[in-house]
Amino acid sequence: MAEAVIEVGNMDSIMELFGRFDENLNFLQHRYEVAILSRGNDIRISGSQADVDRASAVINTLLSMIGRGEHIDRQSMSYVGSMVDEGTAEQAVKLTDDGICVTQSGKIVKPKALGQKRYIDCISKNTIVMGVGPAGTGKTYLAVAMAVKAFKAHETSRIILTRPAVEAGEKLGFLPGDMQNKVDPYLRPLYDALFDMMGAETFSKHMEKGTIEVAPLAYMRGRTLDDSFIILDEAQNTTREQIKMFLTRLGFNSKMVITGDVTQIDLPDPKKSGLVDAINVLKNVEDIATVRFSEKDVVRHKLVQDIIKAYEKAYNDRKR
Image 1: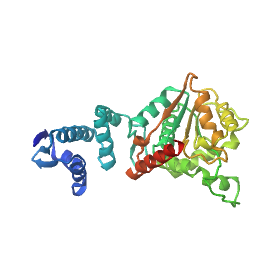
Image 2 (image 1 turned 180 degrees about the vertical axis):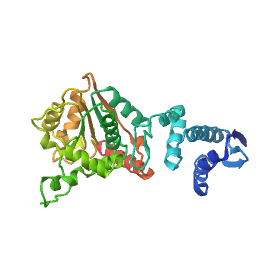
Image 3 (image 1 turned 90 degrees about the horizontal axis):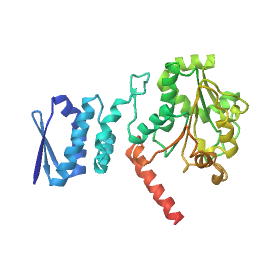
Image 4 (image 1 turned 30 degrees about the vertical axis):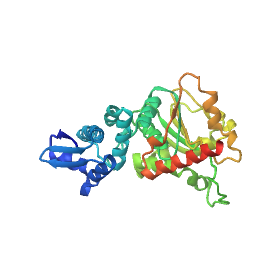
């Protein structure tokens, strides 16, 4: 039986680490098959040597994150655990340094996974970035956060958000109302992200002034988008012609972010996805970066990671 003792500066950090009703503590003990006790400002870990070493590394990393003001939940513990297993735990602490912007509720938007950190770094350094990966990896939300950051810093004068109006496997038929009413259901995720960052009133004000524009992809044809931060969401549902049209709208002092999940193509012929084509065609073009997310970057419920893994396995089995 091995034992390790970790000295903690204050009881508040221990309380944050252990969680409400010791839910985090119970999770750590179950995952690493160790016993964890608090004695004053010390945390004592006992179990097999290998399990104690892993649990100690995870707890030390989590305590460093708590010291930087991070809230610890089961998801962050699982992610830190996987990084400890991969030997990259020190990078988890660095994620806490990169605040992008503050939401209306006062929450700081920042990357929660290394893939997300790589994504925002690429957006900062490149003119065009393609973010490709499964649902729940924050592709759209972080792109909108970077757009709001650039807009508030007066680096660009407009935010333009667009996505193809393709139904996800359903035929919705006729939708009532004017053009805006008809396309709003397709653009709702973009609205939601902007509401969160700016608040409904500020968002509406900028929409009226034309400094924020949310429109279907078809309305991009023939335009030159100068001094703008442009986001194309759900790009896996563009055709090759559409994504080429979109990319050639790029104007001076503008930045483009293209997001999509190539496993969720709703086109009649998935092989003709414009996003898949663009990734291959533009892979060697300077100032264009592609960031690929994995299930490890999912920041939704842990079950979402498990669902993605299961579907990937089934897909690979069918291919074989």
